[in-house]
Image (tube, rainbow, N blue to C red; front, side):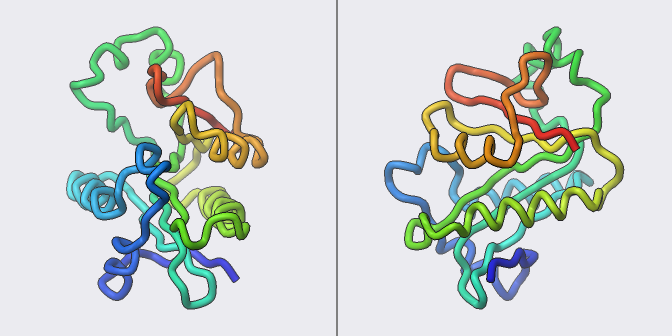
Length: 175
């Protein structure tokens, strides 16, 4: 049975030990870096939810989510000044920041069930109302694209809260 458990002192080391396959390493940051990013965002008052994904008592993955956060910063100033961003600006959204299933547990349906539970969690609006859930993925990650689209995510043409570049694609799910 898949469940999401808040990352804490008791399980953070288990999360850090989880890894994707060598071929997937360019698709997602290491979990230790993700937890550092979560800590830094929280230290600046940003709401972040970091969950270990468990199958019964076995950690099998990790997911990190946030709310209405413009984390693109000064290095993406061109994005912040773009017409695409201006169409998105002011809309409230949750975002799935990181999502991975350990290489030993892939292909067992755990990712699909974990994503379902994450979407259910975000639909409770733990930080307030939102219009969308958004995420991004590497252009070459067809497995992730297929999973996200099976839940109703789509690649927006009218706006996107993430930047589009030659490697990364945004997708959104209307709540």
